[in-house]
Length: 101
Image (cartoon, rainbow, N blue to C red):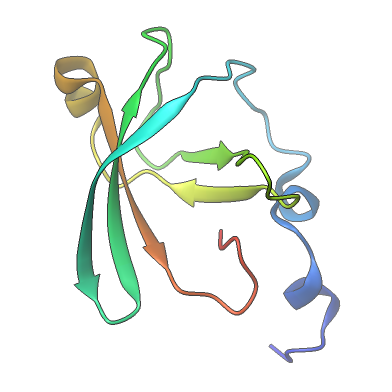
């Protein structure tokens, strides 16, 4: 893909706007960060709302205070981890077009 292509410049919401979403919004707190490789970090987040659920393969949209562009990140942990520990894990890669999706 060319760096100047429309797809490279589109936002996460542009690319996923027609996807069905769970309307639940929950605060989350980063409780652990691991450097997996020079370009990838794993983030473990404690999810505040007990009603938050997901299925394997789903992503989570992030709305970060002070950041105008939303990011969508794949959840790398299992729903069982969320049920047992109240946390989810994400793998986040360095990107020239943050936030990455």
